[in-house]
Length: 175
Image 1 (cartoon, rainbow, N blue to C red):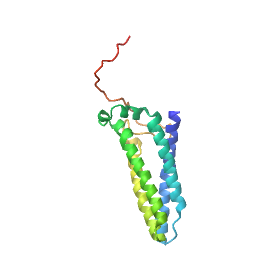
Image 2 (spheres, rainbow, N blue to C red; image 1 turned 120 degrees about the vertical axis):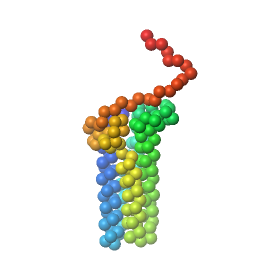
Image 3 (cartoon, rainbow, N blue to C red; image 1 turned 45 degrees about the vertical axis):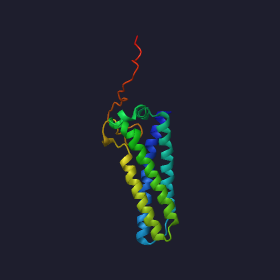
Image 4 (cartoon, one colour; image 1 turned 135 degrees about the vertical axis):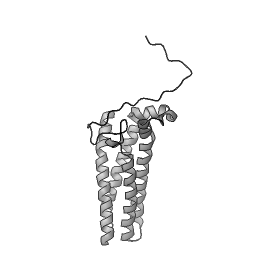
C-alpha cells in the first residue's frame, strides 16, 4: 500500500504543477487583456493541491519509514539531510504552498474588480508555485532526498538510516 501511495503522490505532483502553471498564465493573460477572472483554473490548481496534501499527510503519518525515523529522534535527525527534508522541510513547504494558494483563490474571488482579481490570483499562485518547487524532492537534490521524476523511475541511490541514539538500557543480546 505504501508504494502505491508514494507512486500516486509522485504522479499527482505533475497534475499540481501543470494546473499551477495554467492558473498563473491565465491570470497574467486575463489581467493584461482586461478580461474577467476565470476561477476554473485556480480551482483546479487548489483542488489538486489539496488532494496532493491529503495524500502526503497520509504518507507522513501512516506509512513513511523515513518520517518514522525522523520522528524517532528529531534532534539527531536534523543532521541527516534526507531525514530533515522529508521529516520537516517538505511538509512545511507543501503545507505553506497549500495555504497560500487557498488564500489567494479566496481573495481573488472577493476582489472588487476583474483586474485586481487576476493580479491577486497571479501573485498568490506564483508564491505557492515557488514554495512547491522548493519542496519537491527533485532528482538533482542528491542522494537520500532526490526522487525519480515519474513513479517507478530510478532516483539517486541512497541509504537512509535512523540517527544513532544513546539509550540507558543496552540492546538485548543477539543469538
